[in-house]
Length: 114
Length: 114
Image (cartoon, rainbow over the protein chains, first blue to last red):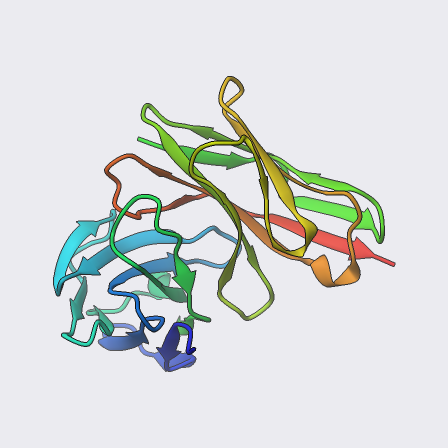
């Protein structure tokens, strides 16, 4: 039973570029959430996708956008990269968007912006 | 709005000693509480969760936590730690109608020494 898988594992981009991160949820899960974890900090909620729609969004600018596909996989896109976007980006999946659905996390994509 | 405060950023302890990692939360609505563990270069793994019912919650790897509504706390405990418990621990809260959006604390680095 595959867990949450993310790709790539590491990525180096230049300021101003655009990046796309990918996530496949745990088998049987239909909801995907994205979190940003800066070095030494706890994860911060970016947004959540369910039924191919963005259902909730955290305090992140419009440069951060996403998509969910019919097979429940998801992409996170970040435009006009800033140095401050350097972080570990975590994808989490759950069965439904309910408050009490435990999240299962992937190992993350480490993004470095130079 | 909800918030989570982990009272200790670092907790050093000797192997086989007991440990308590402290977590306080604030919320104006009913909450669900979680503890996650993060090993180096990995994503987050769910240790335990409080959704309702008994205030003493048992999790994986011998960890347990107690929900105290009057003190708005959810401290994590283990009676005897192992070297392999060395990791970062995150307390998180989800509230009613938050649809799976987790608010994380800053994390507590548990360092188990031989």
